[in-house]
Image (cartoon, rainbow, N blue to C red; front, side, top):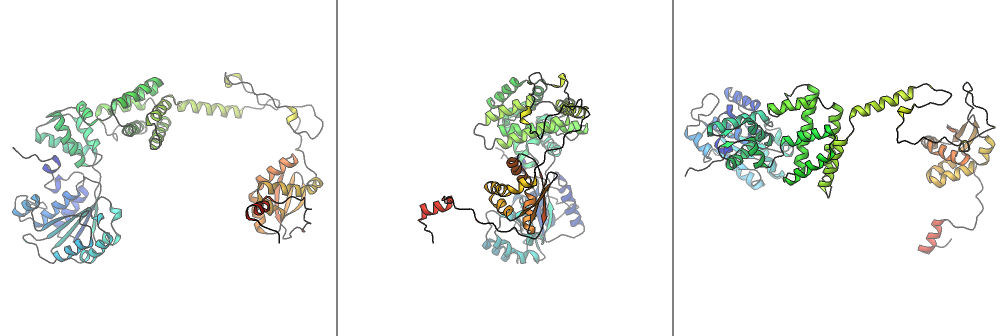
Length: 541
Protein backbone atom coordinates (compact mmCIF):
# COMPACT_ATOMS: atom_id res chain seq x y z
CA UNK A 1 0.00 0.00 0.00
CA UNK A 2 1.38 3.38 -1.01
CA UNK A 3 2.13 5.67 1.91
CA UNK A 4 -0.18 8.67 2.05
CA UNK A 5 1.48 12.10 2.27
CA UNK A 6 -0.56 15.21 3.01
CA UNK A 7 -0.76 17.86 0.31
CA UNK A 8 1.32 20.43 2.24
CA UNK A 9 4.27 18.00 2.33
CA UNK A 10 3.78 16.27 -1.00
CA UNK A 11 3.59 19.50 -2.97
CA UNK A 12 6.14 21.52 -1.00
CA UNK A 13 7.94 23.90 -3.40
CA UNK A 14 11.24 22.54 -4.73
CA UNK A 15 12.35 25.73 -6.52
CA UNK A 16 12.20 29.40 -5.63
CA UNK A 17 9.75 29.98 -8.47
CA UNK A 18 7.28 27.57 -6.84
CA UNK A 19 6.99 29.60 -3.63
CA UNK A 20 3.54 31.20 -3.72
CA UNK A 21 3.03 34.88 -3.02
CA UNK A 22 6.54 35.75 -1.77
CA UNK A 23 8.23 37.03 -4.91
CA UNK A 24 9.89 39.93 -3.08
CA UNK A 25 11.73 37.43 -0.84
CA UNK A 26 12.71 34.83 -3.42
CA UNK A 27 13.92 37.45 -5.90
CA UNK A 28 16.21 39.03 -3.30
CA UNK A 29 17.67 35.68 -2.24
CA UNK A 30 18.29 34.59 -5.82
CA UNK A 31 20.05 37.87 -6.60
CA UNK A 32 22.20 37.46 -3.48
CA UNK A 33 23.19 33.95 -4.61
CA UNK A 34 23.95 35.12 -8.15
CA UNK A 35 26.16 38.02 -6.98
CA UNK A 36 27.79 36.01 -4.16
CA UNK A 37 26.48 38.43 -1.51
CA UNK A 38 25.08 35.85 0.88
CA UNK A 39 24.63 37.10 4.46
CA UNK A 40 25.56 35.01 7.49
CA UNK A 41 22.12 35.34 9.18
CA UNK A 42 18.56 35.72 7.90
CA UNK A 43 15.33 36.30 9.80
CA UNK A 44 12.04 35.27 8.16
CA UNK A 45 8.90 36.67 9.83
CA UNK A 46 5.24 36.44 8.90
CA UNK A 47 1.95 34.58 9.52
CA UNK A 48 1.75 30.82 9.71
CA UNK A 49 1.71 28.74 6.55
CA UNK A 50 3.10 31.33 4.13
CA UNK A 51 6.43 29.63 3.25
CA UNK A 52 9.02 30.70 5.84
CA UNK A 53 10.44 27.24 6.62
CA UNK A 54 10.07 26.15 2.98
CA UNK A 55 12.13 29.11 1.79
CA UNK A 56 14.74 28.40 4.47
CA UNK A 57 15.13 24.81 3.25
CA UNK A 58 15.35 25.97 -0.37
CA UNK A 59 18.15 28.37 0.56
CA UNK A 60 19.94 25.61 2.49
CA UNK A 61 19.68 23.23 -0.48
CA UNK A 62 20.84 25.84 -2.97
CA UNK A 63 24.02 26.77 -1.06
CA UNK A 64 24.95 23.09 -0.60
CA UNK A 65 23.78 21.73 -3.97
CA UNK A 66 26.52 19.96 -5.94
CA UNK A 67 25.07 20.94 -9.32
CA UNK A 68 22.87 24.04 -8.90
CA UNK A 69 20.70 25.07 -11.83
CA UNK A 70 21.01 28.83 -11.99
CA UNK A 71 20.01 29.99 -8.50
CA UNK A 72 17.96 26.86 -7.76
CA UNK A 73 18.94 23.42 -6.41
CA UNK A 74 18.84 20.53 -8.87
CA UNK A 75 17.00 18.40 -6.24
CA UNK A 76 18.72 15.28 -7.57
CA UNK A 77 22.23 15.31 -6.07
CA UNK A 78 23.05 13.51 -2.82
CA UNK A 79 23.11 16.71 -0.78
CA UNK A 80 19.69 17.85 -2.05
CA UNK A 81 18.11 14.45 -1.40
CA UNK A 82 19.51 14.30 2.13
CA UNK A 83 18.22 17.77 2.93
CA UNK A 84 14.80 16.99 1.42
CA UNK A 85 14.54 13.80 3.47
CA UNK A 86 15.74 15.56 6.64
CA UNK A 87 18.85 13.42 7.19
CA UNK A 88 21.61 15.85 6.29
CA UNK A 89 24.34 16.47 8.87
CA UNK A 90 24.97 19.91 7.37
CA UNK A 91 21.41 21.28 7.74
CA UNK A 92 20.10 21.24 11.30
CA UNK A 93 16.48 22.26 11.97
CA UNK A 94 15.93 23.27 15.57
CA UNK A 95 12.57 23.85 17.24
CA UNK A 96 12.87 27.04 19.25
CA UNK A 97 9.92 26.12 21.46
CA UNK A 98 11.50 22.90 22.82
CA UNK A 99 15.15 24.00 22.67
CA UNK A 100 14.80 27.41 24.23
CA UNK A 101 17.24 27.31 27.12
CA UNK A 102 20.76 28.66 27.45
CA UNK A 103 22.26 25.15 27.62
CA UNK A 104 20.97 24.28 24.13
CA UNK A 105 22.46 27.49 22.73
CA UNK A 106 25.79 26.74 24.41
CA UNK A 107 25.83 23.35 22.69
CA UNK A 108 25.07 25.10 19.41
CA UNK A 109 27.99 27.46 19.95
CA UNK A 110 30.28 24.49 20.40
CA UNK A 111 29.04 22.71 17.27
CA UNK A 112 29.55 25.70 14.94
CA UNK A 113 33.29 25.25 15.22
CA UNK A 114 33.20 22.09 13.13
CA UNK A 115 33.23 22.28 9.34
CA UNK A 116 30.33 20.88 7.28
CA UNK A 117 30.49 17.19 6.47
CA UNK A 118 29.70 17.28 2.73
CA UNK A 119 28.42 20.69 1.67
CA UNK A 120 29.85 24.19 1.55
CA UNK A 121 27.78 25.54 4.47
CA UNK A 122 26.55 24.28 7.79
CA UNK A 123 23.03 25.71 8.04
CA UNK A 124 21.11 26.16 11.29
CA UNK A 125 17.36 26.71 10.83
CA UNK A 126 15.72 27.75 14.12
CA UNK A 127 11.94 27.75 13.84
CA UNK A 128 9.82 29.88 16.22
CA UNK A 129 12.97 31.63 17.36
CA UNK A 130 10.96 34.07 19.49
CA UNK A 131 10.45 31.25 22.00
CA UNK A 132 14.11 31.37 23.10
CA UNK A 133 14.70 32.77 26.57
CA UNK A 134 16.42 36.08 27.18
CA UNK A 135 19.54 34.28 28.43
CA UNK A 136 19.58 32.07 25.31
CA UNK A 137 19.40 35.11 23.04
CA UNK A 138 22.25 36.74 24.93
CA UNK A 139 24.36 33.58 24.62
CA UNK A 140 23.78 33.60 20.86
CA UNK A 141 24.75 37.23 20.25
CA UNK A 142 28.51 36.93 19.80
CA UNK A 143 28.32 33.81 17.63
CA UNK A 144 25.57 35.37 15.54
CA UNK A 145 27.55 38.54 14.92
CA UNK A 146 30.85 36.87 13.95
CA UNK A 147 30.20 33.23 12.95
CA UNK A 148 32.72 31.10 11.09
CA UNK A 149 32.65 31.53 7.31
CA UNK A 150 31.03 28.12 6.80
CA UNK A 151 28.01 28.87 9.05
CA UNK A 152 24.60 30.16 7.91
CA UNK A 153 21.83 31.00 10.38
CA UNK A 154 18.18 31.15 9.26
CA UNK A 155 15.58 32.13 11.87
CA UNK A 156 11.80 31.89 11.40
CA UNK A 157 9.14 33.47 13.62
CA UNK A 158 5.46 34.37 13.63
CA UNK A 159 5.90 36.96 16.39
CA UNK A 160 8.65 39.33 15.32
CA UNK A 161 7.91 41.76 18.15
CA UNK A 162 9.23 39.21 20.67
CA UNK A 163 12.67 39.01 19.06
CA UNK A 164 15.18 41.34 20.79
CA UNK A 165 16.50 44.28 18.83
CA UNK A 166 20.05 43.01 19.36
CA UNK A 167 19.16 39.91 17.32
CA UNK A 168 17.29 41.87 14.65
CA UNK A 169 20.27 44.16 14.07
CA UNK A 170 22.51 41.17 13.29
CA UNK A 171 20.21 39.60 10.66
CA UNK A 172 18.80 40.41 7.26
CA UNK A 173 15.07 40.55 7.86
CA UNK A 174 12.43 39.42 5.36
CA UNK A 175 8.72 39.94 6.03
CA UNK A 176 6.54 37.26 4.46
CA UNK A 177 3.08 38.40 3.39
CA UNK A 178 -0.35 36.82 3.68
CA UNK A 179 -1.10 35.04 0.43
CA UNK A 180 -3.92 36.39 -1.72
CA UNK A 181 -7.06 34.31 -2.20
CA UNK A 182 -6.59 34.18 -5.98
CA UNK A 183 -3.03 32.83 -5.61
CA UNK A 184 -4.15 30.13 -3.14
CA UNK A 185 -7.01 29.11 -5.44
CA UNK A 186 -4.63 28.90 -8.40
CA UNK A 187 -2.23 26.70 -6.43
CA UNK A 188 -5.03 24.36 -5.32
CA UNK A 189 -6.33 24.15 -8.89
CA UNK A 190 -2.88 23.08 -10.12
CA UNK A 191 -2.65 20.44 -7.38
CA UNK A 192 -6.14 19.14 -8.20
CA UNK A 193 -5.13 18.83 -11.84
CA UNK A 194 -2.02 16.84 -10.92
CA UNK A 195 -4.06 14.60 -8.62
CA UNK A 196 -6.79 14.04 -11.22
CA UNK A 197 -9.55 15.62 -9.11
CA UNK A 198 -12.65 17.35 -10.46
CA UNK A 199 -13.46 20.48 -8.49
CA UNK A 200 -15.25 23.64 -9.62
CA UNK A 201 -13.83 27.14 -9.30
CA UNK A 202 -16.41 28.24 -6.71
CA UNK A 203 -15.34 25.37 -4.44
CA UNK A 204 -11.66 26.27 -4.85
CA UNK A 205 -12.42 29.90 -4.05
CA UNK A 206 -14.32 28.91 -0.92
CA UNK A 207 -11.41 26.77 0.34
CA UNK A 208 -8.94 29.56 -0.46
CA UNK A 209 -10.99 32.11 1.50
CA UNK A 210 -11.20 29.76 4.48
CA UNK A 211 -7.41 29.53 4.44
CA UNK A 212 -7.30 33.17 5.58
CA UNK A 213 -4.02 33.97 3.83
CA UNK A 214 -2.29 30.70 4.80
CA UNK A 215 -1.52 28.28 1.98
CA UNK A 216 -0.86 25.45 4.44
CA UNK A 217 -4.25 25.93 6.12
CA UNK A 218 -5.97 25.93 2.74
CA UNK A 219 -4.16 22.76 1.69
CA UNK A 220 -5.20 21.05 4.95
CA UNK A 221 -8.83 21.96 4.25
CA UNK A 222 -8.36 20.69 0.70
CA UNK A 223 -7.27 17.28 2.06
CA UNK A 224 -10.28 17.20 4.40
CA UNK A 225 -12.71 17.94 1.58
CA UNK A 226 -11.16 15.30 -0.70
CA UNK A 227 -11.44 12.71 2.07
CA UNK A 228 -15.16 13.44 2.47
CA UNK A 229 -16.28 14.09 -1.10
CA UNK A 230 -14.04 11.83 -3.14
CA UNK A 231 -12.61 12.75 -6.50
CA UNK A 232 -15.53 14.93 -7.61
CA UNK A 233 -16.08 17.98 -5.43
CA UNK A 234 -18.76 20.67 -5.66
CA UNK A 235 -19.39 23.92 -3.83
CA UNK A 236 -22.47 22.53 -2.05
CA UNK A 237 -20.53 19.55 -0.70
CA UNK A 238 -17.85 21.85 0.74
CA UNK A 239 -20.44 24.01 2.47
CA UNK A 240 -21.89 20.92 4.13
CA UNK A 241 -18.52 19.34 4.90
CA UNK A 242 -17.03 22.40 6.58
CA UNK A 243 -20.36 23.63 8.02
CA UNK A 244 -19.88 27.02 6.36
CA UNK A 245 -22.59 29.67 6.34
CA UNK A 246 -23.73 29.81 2.73
CA UNK A 247 -23.50 33.15 0.92
CA UNK A 248 -27.15 32.75 -0.03
CA UNK A 249 -28.11 33.34 3.60
CA UNK A 250 -26.53 36.80 3.55
CA UNK A 251 -28.27 37.74 0.32
CA UNK A 252 -31.54 36.61 1.89
CA UNK A 253 -30.91 38.96 4.80
CA UNK A 254 -30.38 41.96 2.55
CA UNK A 255 -33.64 41.08 0.79
CA UNK A 256 -35.38 41.06 4.19
CA UNK A 257 -33.92 44.50 4.90
CA UNK A 258 -35.33 45.83 1.64
CA UNK A 259 -38.81 44.44 2.36
CA UNK A 260 -38.74 45.29 6.11
CA UNK A 261 -39.67 41.67 6.92
CA UNK A 262 -38.89 41.34 10.64
CA UNK A 263 -40.63 37.96 10.87
CA UNK A 264 -38.35 36.62 8.15
CA UNK A 265 -35.36 37.76 10.20
CA UNK A 266 -36.45 35.67 13.19
CA UNK A 267 -36.95 32.67 10.90
CA UNK A 268 -33.48 33.20 9.40
CA UNK A 269 -31.85 33.18 12.85
CA UNK A 270 -33.70 29.95 13.69
CA UNK A 271 -32.44 28.32 10.48
CA UNK A 272 -28.92 29.48 11.24
CA UNK A 273 -28.83 27.99 14.73
CA UNK A 274 -30.77 24.85 13.78
CA UNK A 275 -28.09 24.17 11.18
CA UNK A 276 -25.44 24.21 13.91
CA UNK A 277 -23.66 27.31 12.64
CA UNK A 278 -21.57 29.47 14.93
CA UNK A 279 -23.00 32.95 15.63
CA UNK A 280 -19.57 34.60 15.57
CA UNK A 281 -18.80 33.05 12.19
CA UNK A 282 -22.16 34.28 10.87
CA UNK A 283 -21.53 37.84 12.07
CA UNK A 284 -18.03 37.81 10.62
CA UNK A 285 -19.42 36.73 7.25
CA UNK A 286 -22.22 39.31 7.51
CA UNK A 287 -19.70 42.08 8.10
CA UNK A 288 -17.78 40.93 5.01
CA UNK A 289 -21.06 40.82 3.04
CA UNK A 290 -21.86 44.46 3.84
CA UNK A 291 -18.24 45.36 3.12
CA UNK A 292 -18.52 43.83 -0.35
CA UNK A 293 -21.70 45.81 -1.07
CA UNK A 294 -19.97 48.96 0.20
CA UNK A 295 -16.98 48.33 -2.10
CA UNK A 296 -19.30 47.82 -5.06
CA UNK A 297 -21.24 50.98 -4.14
CA UNK A 298 -18.24 53.29 -3.66
CA UNK A 299 -16.04 52.02 -6.50
CA UNK A 300 -18.71 51.00 -9.00
CA UNK A 301 -16.71 47.82 -9.58
CA UNK A 302 -16.43 44.32 -8.08
CA UNK A 303 -12.72 43.92 -8.77
CA UNK A 304 -11.78 44.17 -5.06
CA UNK A 305 -14.37 41.59 -3.97
CA UNK A 306 -13.11 38.05 -3.30
CA UNK A 307 -16.05 36.11 -4.69
CA UNK A 308 -17.18 34.19 -7.74
CA UNK A 309 -18.20 36.01 -10.89
CA UNK A 310 -21.86 35.27 -10.19
CA UNK A 311 -21.68 36.70 -6.66
CA UNK A 312 -19.77 39.75 -7.90
CA UNK A 313 -22.59 40.53 -10.28
CA UNK A 314 -25.09 40.15 -7.43
CA UNK A 315 -23.09 42.55 -5.26
CA UNK A 316 -23.22 45.16 -8.01
CA UNK A 317 -27.00 44.78 -8.09
CA UNK A 318 -27.25 44.98 -4.29
CA UNK A 319 -25.22 48.20 -4.32
CA UNK A 320 -27.99 49.94 -6.29
CA UNK A 321 -30.46 49.39 -3.45
CA UNK A 322 -28.59 50.92 -0.49
CA UNK A 323 -26.84 54.21 0.14
CA UNK A 324 -23.33 54.50 1.55
CA UNK A 325 -24.79 55.84 4.80
CA UNK A 326 -27.06 52.80 5.07
CA UNK A 327 -24.16 50.39 4.62
CA UNK A 328 -21.99 52.18 7.16
CA UNK A 329 -24.82 52.02 9.71
CA UNK A 330 -25.26 48.30 9.01
CA UNK A 331 -21.55 47.71 9.56
CA UNK A 332 -21.54 49.59 12.86
CA UNK A 333 -24.53 47.59 14.09
CA UNK A 334 -22.89 44.27 13.18
CA UNK A 335 -19.65 45.30 14.91
CA UNK A 336 -21.60 46.31 18.01
CA UNK A 337 -23.35 42.94 18.05
CA UNK A 338 -20.03 41.08 17.82
CA UNK A 339 -18.72 43.03 20.80
CA UNK A 340 -21.89 42.60 22.87
CA UNK A 341 -22.01 38.82 22.35
CA UNK A 342 -18.78 38.41 24.32
CA UNK A 343 -20.63 39.32 27.51
CA UNK A 344 -24.14 38.16 26.67
CA UNK A 345 -25.58 35.21 28.61
CA UNK A 346 -28.20 34.66 25.85
CA UNK A 347 -26.44 35.10 22.48
CA UNK A 348 -29.50 33.96 20.52
CA UNK A 349 -31.76 36.60 22.09
CA UNK A 350 -29.24 39.34 21.37
CA UNK A 351 -28.78 38.18 17.77
CA UNK A 352 -32.54 38.07 17.15
CA UNK A 353 -33.01 41.57 18.59
CA UNK A 354 -30.18 43.03 16.52
CA UNK A 355 -31.33 41.33 13.31
CA UNK A 356 -34.83 42.80 13.81
CA UNK A 357 -33.26 46.20 14.48
CA UNK A 358 -31.16 45.83 11.33
CA UNK A 359 -34.24 45.01 9.25
CA UNK A 360 -36.44 47.78 10.70
CA UNK A 361 -33.75 50.47 10.78
CA UNK A 362 -35.06 53.63 9.07
CA UNK A 363 -33.45 54.42 5.76
CA UNK A 364 -30.90 57.22 5.83
CA UNK A 365 -32.96 59.12 3.23
CA UNK A 366 -35.78 59.47 5.76
CA UNK A 367 -33.39 60.92 8.30
CA UNK A 368 -32.05 63.37 5.70
CA UNK A 369 -35.56 64.49 4.85
CA UNK A 370 -36.28 65.07 8.53
CA UNK A 371 -33.17 67.22 8.93
CA UNK A 372 -34.12 69.17 5.79
CA UNK A 373 -37.61 69.75 7.19
CA UNK A 374 -36.21 70.98 10.49
CA UNK A 375 -33.94 73.38 8.60
CA UNK A 376 -36.88 74.76 6.66
CA UNK A 377 -38.82 75.17 9.89
CA UNK A 378 -35.97 77.07 11.49
CA UNK A 379 -35.59 79.42 8.53
CA UNK A 380 -39.34 80.22 8.33
CA UNK A 381 -40.01 83.92 9.06
CA UNK A 382 -41.58 84.98 12.35
CA UNK A 383 -45.17 86.18 12.33
CA UNK A 384 -46.49 88.27 15.21
CA UNK A 385 -43.52 87.37 17.38
CA UNK A 386 -44.43 83.65 17.24
CA UNK A 387 -43.20 81.02 14.79
CA UNK A 388 -46.13 79.13 13.34
CA UNK A 389 -45.89 75.49 12.36
CA UNK A 390 -48.02 74.21 9.54
CA UNK A 391 -50.22 71.19 10.12
CA UNK A 392 -48.37 68.78 7.74
CA UNK A 393 -45.14 69.24 9.72
CA UNK A 394 -46.84 68.08 12.94
CA UNK A 395 -47.15 64.39 13.69
CA UNK A 396 -50.68 63.05 13.74
CA UNK A 397 -50.09 61.36 17.09
CA UNK A 398 -48.45 64.37 18.71
CA UNK A 399 -50.60 66.32 21.16
CA UNK A 400 -50.57 70.14 20.90
CA UNK A 401 -48.06 71.70 23.24
CA UNK A 402 -49.81 73.75 25.98
CA UNK A 403 -49.04 77.41 26.17
CA UNK A 404 -46.96 78.45 29.14
CA UNK A 405 -48.88 80.06 31.93
CA UNK A 406 -48.34 83.78 32.49
CA UNK A 407 -47.87 83.04 36.17
CA UNK A 408 -44.89 80.85 35.35
CA UNK A 409 -43.02 83.73 33.75
CA UNK A 410 -41.34 86.27 36.04
CA UNK A 411 -42.82 89.75 35.73
CA UNK A 412 -41.02 93.00 36.55
CA UNK A 413 -43.97 95.33 36.07
CA UNK A 414 -47.56 95.69 34.89
CA UNK A 415 -48.46 93.73 31.81
CA UNK A 416 -48.39 95.56 28.49
CA UNK A 417 -50.39 94.73 25.38
CA UNK A 418 -48.26 92.84 22.86
CA UNK A 419 -47.49 94.58 19.60
CA UNK A 420 -45.65 93.13 16.59
CA UNK A 421 -43.53 96.27 16.28
CA UNK A 422 -42.88 96.66 19.99
CA UNK A 423 -39.35 95.99 21.21
CA UNK A 424 -38.97 93.28 23.90
CA UNK A 425 -38.83 94.59 27.45
CA UNK A 426 -35.36 94.75 29.02
CA UNK A 427 -34.52 91.85 31.39
CA UNK A 428 -35.23 92.53 35.06
CA UNK A 429 -32.27 93.61 37.19
CA UNK A 430 -31.33 93.19 40.83
CA UNK A 431 -30.40 96.00 43.17
CA UNK A 432 -26.84 96.24 44.43
CA UNK A 433 -28.08 96.78 47.97
CA UNK A 434 -30.06 93.56 47.93
CA UNK A 435 -27.05 91.56 46.69
CA UNK A 436 -24.76 93.17 49.27
CA UNK A 437 -27.18 92.44 52.12
CA UNK A 438 -27.57 88.80 51.10
CA UNK A 439 -23.98 88.16 49.95
CA UNK A 440 -23.13 85.97 52.95
CA UNK A 441 -26.34 84.05 52.39
CA UNK A 442 -25.16 83.44 48.81
CA UNK A 443 -21.71 82.28 50.02
CA UNK A 444 -23.34 79.92 52.53
CA UNK A 445 -25.56 78.42 49.86
CA UNK A 446 -22.56 77.85 47.59
CA UNK A 447 -20.66 76.21 50.44
CA UNK A 448 -23.54 73.80 51.05
CA UNK A 449 -23.34 72.55 47.48
CA UNK A 450 -19.59 72.88 46.79
CA UNK A 451 -17.49 73.18 49.94
CA UNK A 452 -14.21 74.05 48.23
CA UNK A 453 -15.86 76.56 45.89
CA UNK A 454 -17.71 78.17 48.81
CA UNK A 455 -14.47 78.48 50.77
CA UNK A 456 -12.81 80.22 47.84
CA UNK A 457 -15.81 82.50 47.36
CA UNK A 458 -15.69 83.43 51.06
CA UNK A 459 -12.23 84.92 50.42
CA UNK A 460 -13.60 87.30 47.75
CA UNK A 461 -15.49 90.56 47.95
CA UNK A 462 -18.46 92.06 46.12
CA UNK A 463 -17.30 95.00 43.97
CA UNK A 464 -20.69 96.05 42.69
CA UNK A 465 -23.74 95.25 40.56
CA UNK A 466 -24.53 97.05 37.32
CA UNK A 467 -26.74 96.27 34.32
CA UNK A 468 -27.27 92.66 35.39
CA UNK A 469 -23.55 92.04 35.98
CA UNK A 470 -22.15 91.08 39.38
CA UNK A 471 -18.49 92.04 39.81
CA UNK A 472 -16.41 89.93 42.19
CA UNK A 473 -12.96 90.92 43.46
CA UNK A 474 -10.34 88.25 44.25
CA UNK A 475 -7.14 88.53 46.26
CA UNK A 476 -4.96 86.18 44.15
CA UNK A 477 -4.74 84.35 40.83
CA UNK A 478 -5.90 81.06 42.31
CA UNK A 479 -9.20 82.58 43.40
CA UNK A 480 -9.62 84.29 40.00
CA UNK A 481 -9.08 80.99 38.17
CA UNK A 482 -11.40 79.04 40.49
CA UNK A 483 -14.27 81.53 40.28
CA UNK A 484 -13.87 81.91 36.50
CA UNK A 485 -13.91 78.15 35.99
CA UNK A 486 -17.13 77.81 38.02
CA UNK A 487 -19.04 80.83 36.66
CA UNK A 488 -21.92 78.73 35.39
CA UNK A 489 -22.35 76.95 38.72
CA UNK A 490 -22.30 80.22 40.68
CA UNK A 491 -24.73 81.88 38.26
CA UNK A 492 -27.12 78.95 38.67
CA UNK A 493 -27.02 79.18 42.49
CA UNK A 494 -27.47 82.97 42.25
CA UNK A 495 -30.51 82.53 40.00
CA UNK A 496 -32.01 80.01 42.43
CA UNK A 497 -31.47 82.34 45.40
CA UNK A 498 -32.43 85.71 43.86
CA UNK A 499 -34.82 84.39 41.17
CA UNK A 500 -32.98 86.30 38.47
CA UNK A 501 -30.21 85.61 35.92
CA UNK A 502 -26.98 87.63 36.07
CA UNK A 503 -23.52 87.61 34.53
CA UNK A 504 -20.41 87.26 36.70
CA UNK A 505 -17.21 89.21 36.15
CA UNK A 506 -14.06 88.40 38.09
CA UNK A 507 -11.26 90.88 38.83
CA UNK A 508 -8.03 90.58 40.75
CA UNK A 509 -7.86 93.28 43.43
CA UNK A 510 -5.06 91.92 45.61
CA UNK A 511 -7.09 92.73 48.72
CA UNK A 512 -8.59 90.12 51.00
CA UNK A 513 -12.00 90.80 52.56
CA UNK A 514 -12.11 92.01 56.12
CA UNK A 515 -12.56 89.18 58.62
CA UNK A 516 -16.02 88.90 60.07
CA UNK A 517 -17.09 87.96 63.54
CA UNK A 518 -17.87 84.30 63.87
CA UNK A 519 -21.57 83.54 63.95
CA UNK A 520 -23.01 82.99 67.40
CA UNK A 521 -23.19 79.44 68.59
CA UNK A 522 -26.56 77.82 68.19
CA UNK A 523 -25.79 75.09 70.65
CA UNK A 524 -25.60 72.52 67.84
CA UNK A 525 -22.38 70.75 67.14
CA UNK A 526 -20.99 70.04 63.70
CA UNK A 527 -21.90 66.49 62.53
CA UNK A 528 -18.21 65.55 62.31
CA UNK A 529 -17.56 66.66 65.91
CA UNK A 530 -20.62 64.74 67.07
CA UNK A 531 -19.38 61.62 65.25
CA UNK A 532 -15.93 61.99 66.82
CA UNK A 533 -17.49 62.24 70.26
CA UNK A 534 -19.73 59.22 69.65
CA UNK A 535 -17.32 56.89 67.87
CA UNK A 536 -13.94 57.89 69.26
CA UNK A 537 -14.83 59.34 72.65
CA UNK A 538 -13.24 62.72 71.83
CA UNK A 539 -13.31 65.45 74.48
CA UNK A 540 -12.82 69.23 74.07
CA UNK A 541 -9.42 70.58 75.14
